Length: 127
Image 1 (cartoon, one colour):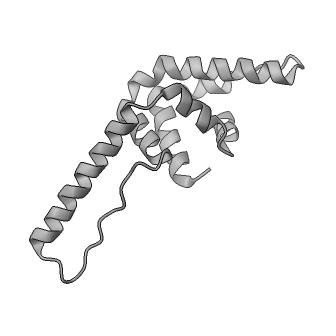
Image 2: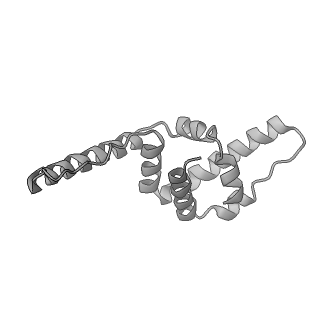
Image 3: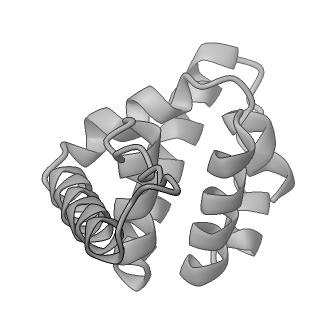
């Protein structure tokens, strides 16, 4: 898992106030497949009931995870103040477009994609 995802997930979990809930998710019936399905269902249910507490952070995470963010502007010594300002305005518009795109993502599909990311399950189990 990339460091930026870890930091964003940590912020989301903190704002959602679900640390204890996550630690209490325990399905150990001996049927590994059934346990994983129950855990996944419980996790999605938990997230869906608390996600309203941090919409901006979720949009930021999704935009980052899906690589929607634009490259940061590069400034050169030859850039005038006006050019720098225009680059920043364009960049801010592109960031807002990335967040809007993230806002309209299918969240269940994103959760499924995130769950396949190496390190996510281990992060959630220790957060």
